[in-house]
Length: 181
Image 1 (cartoon, rainbow, N blue to C red):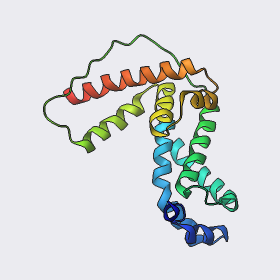
Image 2 (cartoon, one colour; image 1 turned 90 degrees about the vertical axis):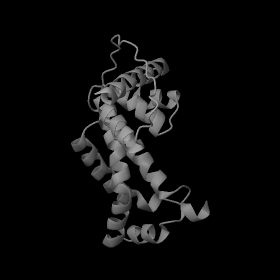
Image 3 (cartoon, helix red, strand yellow; image 1 turned 60 degrees about the vertical axis):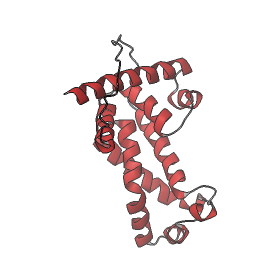
Image 4 (tube, rainbow, N blue to C red; image 1 turned 90 degrees about the horizontal axis):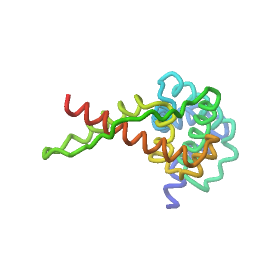
């Protein structure tokens, strides 16, 4: 684990000193991953790009506080999640719960190509209502518990649970529809 935590130590130390090549290298190494978090949470390429840029500005301002207690990627990811949540809180989020017919997904005998299935999942995820998408992303992609999600979003745990359930239901229906098309 020690090697992983210190994997980019030389770049981080150079970036702490203001070395542009090191900052650019860290940006190149982590920007795509952080952007993908933003896309899943914000559902909009422009917002994801803007927040990613803001996060890197914040990272480079706070780099002196990075103490190698975790990987640089985990530290940057936490900043991205928090910044994305802050961005979402500046606009009204809708947690409506209209009735949706239950979708029953039965896998076919033929195995789907994993890359195509992931692309369908990502497309379907972006089509979810914002509240469902954000709760789903925080729960499954960021590993937060319902209590943590509720605290971050200032909603009840029962709302996070219902949004997660609705997200899974809508995703099943959407993916089934795309597979059958």
